[in-house]
Length: 166
Image (cartoon, helix red, strand yellow):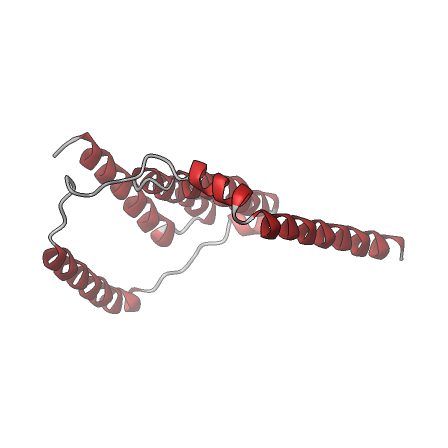
């Protein structure tokens, strides 16, 4: 087992443990903070898979945007921080059965394919190839989407301003 495997198992453990606490924690603020660790763990797994662009998007969009918005919404609303999330024990047995079936299917797939980490060639970076293809092959589509997003932003701003005047 080399350093790559150890780091992978650490990120996988971080992701699974924090995701477990997201689901089982009764305090919604604590669940939101455990969601932060879950999303960072997934970003780390993306980096290990050689998908650095997806890792950066994961951190910028999910951690930087959605999770911070969720935390602000929870913290600004006073009533929501005191709400106790009720989880029933009736769902434990079906959840354990589904997890067991999923683990069995995953184990059988891993045995059939006989994964070998030495033979797997992981690309070093994907953002260079993605940027090059966006600027060379898909430049027209890239520019059209940029103009479309600009039109949508102007439309949203004009609708918001119109409702403000009324």
